[in-house]
Amino acid sequence: MRGVRRSGLIFLLLLSLTLPFGADLAPQTSPGTAAPVVFVPSGAPPGAPPGAPTVAVRAFETDGRTHICVNDIAAAIGGTLEFDRNTNSYEIKVGPHSIAFGPEAPLAVVDTKLVSLSYAVKGDGPLVYADPEFFQKVLSLVLEAAITWEKAERRLSVKKVEVPEVTVEASVADFEGTTKVVLRFSKLPPYKSERTDDQLLLRFPGWKLLASPVEQLLPDKKVSRLLIRGSDAAVYFREKGLTANVYALANPPRLVVDVSRPAPALAPLPASPSAPLANVPPPVPSPGPPSVPPKTIVVDPGHGGSENGARGPGGLLEKDATLALAKVLRDTLVKRGYKVILTRETDTTLLLDERASIANAAKADLFLSLHANASRSASAHGTEVYYLSLDASDRAAAALADSENRQQEPAPTPDAETNAALRDLDLILWDLAQNQHLGASARLAEIIQADFNRLLGVATRGVKQAPFRVLIGVNAPAVLVEVAFITNPEEEKKLASEEFRNEVAETLAGSLETYYKVADGAPPVPILSVAPAPGRGN
Image 1: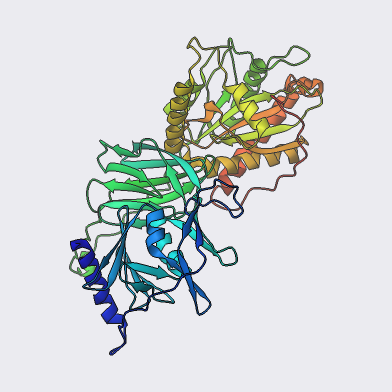
Image 2: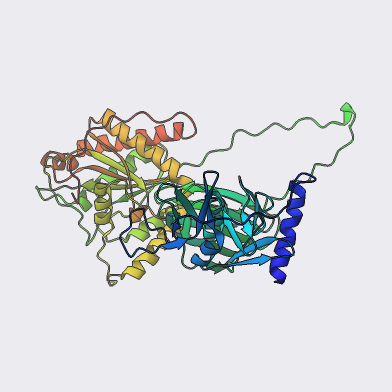
């Protein structure tokens, strides 16, 4: 009874603050009886078949309103109701929750929250009745459910609120002094962030986050703990004064939290006393503008060695066509002042990850992977330009990426768990290496696609995104160009033609110059698209 008396005293204190002075606190009269109310605690729908869980609850009518027995409802939901005669108040306990109320005023205290009601409950000793609104406003809070009242059917129903669920996977990595917390979602729900000295809290109201594990204790120097539970994700800091930047990314949907230490403030320059003009040394002539080092372009001829790639109807192999084109492009770019590195200069096998490593080791300013497209339809023609995404922009792009990603490697086929781990690793690599270049890669892809359409008269099939492994991990703007369809007899002849290779090389060189001119300025030229024919894998 100590808990009841404590709740009753709290209720009376709140009551004294809300009731006008001299209000009548006389006890309620004893209610009569009427037809019982049907209570549906499990949310069975109206018109449920016989056997649906329902409870008959005592009730009475007065002034056109139905009053339902709170004692019966409390018992039906597995709770208890206690009456404190000293304070003339009631307390319902349901699990960890408490509801305190009384017949003197239209108020209730749910845990620590004060709820205002239209009508006070009607009590007679331990027995208490309440208007349907009481259950809709008060009981719904502790049951976390909607409560409906159907007056004609005399039915009070509990309906659990369907909370949409979203899966979330978390990864944490340190990159050049910044801790990146990456949350990947099956679908990114609306969110808001709250910041304190020791944590960043991401709230997703109305959503349930499904994460495994729920909690991660981290050895990171800046982030100590990651907790994903309910509708919140909390990033705990190891020290105060850290900065946290939150931004969303698509394909796949993610939230990234960059945690870093603020840059040290620059010390002010010491004030120097003014000197007489006679003591001022003559100005030193400024040197000329420093020489700008040439841009480093890494050109990657697709396939090679044991990897033939696609084959044309006349026998031309993709690996030979791309190497011949890459050499012409190299010579063209060198003449325009670029430094060019080919990932392969002979017919050798080169793994996809090695190609990205070559680009990073050369500190490439741009990575360009050359390929020839293929289709079961001999009439498919045109060029396609891709930039990286771990999820393809369409089914054809996914099939093409899957085809290009296959390599003749001695490693066994990974199982599902290994595949998932590899995908997570790829995601982290992409986040660390390609995030900052994603916009630049898209801009370059649009320029190349438009130039092919305008200058070569090649039908545009559109700029697309796909998870090409050769692009993953490249720390520079990176695109993959499917120059033409080697499976189209006419385009196969073009790919084997020195004239066409020169035209493509000049066009790509012009695209790079346009890209560097507009990289920080105007948007690229618009693309004139045509409907794509079925591509590789269709």
